[in-house]
Length: 370
Ligand SMILES: *Cc1c(COP(=O)(O)O)cnc(C)c1O
Image (cartoon, rainbow, N blue to C red; front, side):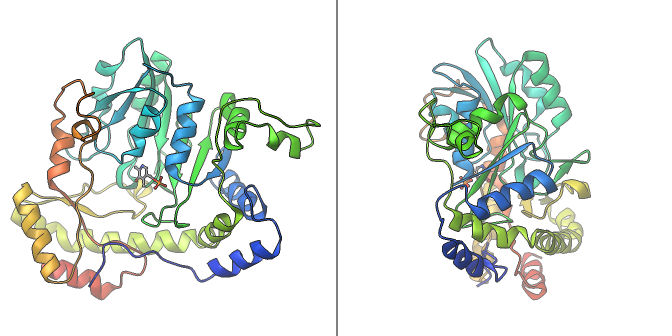
């Protein structure tokens, strides 16, 4: 069976975990946590990086930092993972779901402004498949209306927009190290703060509403309860695992991109001949080899392709079901139809993509496809 995903281990993970254990401090904010956060602040130029136990957690922190309260409105694409909306709903937000472009699932900025009201507080953008949203247009709208932009960059590590790394453009952003992503720690995430206004408070929310981080820097002589928050920081054991991955980030990205380009070049002609669209080819700086997808011409065609590949021991999978029509939210949704989001719900199909995919597997998949 060629699986859809297979978590890749660099080989150093358990050695670093053992080292973390031997250091005698395995709670949060320890040796490896600081090493990982430093890596993102130095190499990625993020103003403030805080490891979290998931991207979902990091998004919850964003909702708290943006002061989302009962009845506030947040604009979120409908074609995304639950967490992009759920984190804000937990704070009492009403979600105004936005539609995607017609040719890719990213939020269509030309459809954002019509959703803005006096109650709008934030815009969440998702860089689907690691491909950048139109951040110039989105930031311009946000600045004009005084809104906070949160980049859900869960899939977008190392991808860029006009030379800037994704996650460094919005007021804050989040990444995931779930085992299905490019860089993994089983479960894990990262909160990035790019706006000075939110830096100090982010540390407080991270450490259960206490000013513990300041205390450990020697800035105050007692620490206590000063704000809301939760236990968002992961154990140093998770950070140790993550460090083994970050050390190899360049090699991991390079390999995934090779698979991506192989798929694209081998399938381009075929796709034209059978009325299937390949994912639009992103310019190189905004391709991180996270995903290779196609857009089938119907739900039925997709089903037939999935079944055929499965018979041939290849696992290809569809993706999100539009959140505006989810069981949980449909009754709260304002009733607008989002045709592009629904189109991707029915027709998008992802092909196997992971570091250890070998060229024979890719060739085999392409052959079965054809
Ligand atoms: C994976 C993913 C998440 C959730 O990440 P976790 O680390 O599992 O919480 C959120 N948003 C998007 C777009 C994702 O792809």
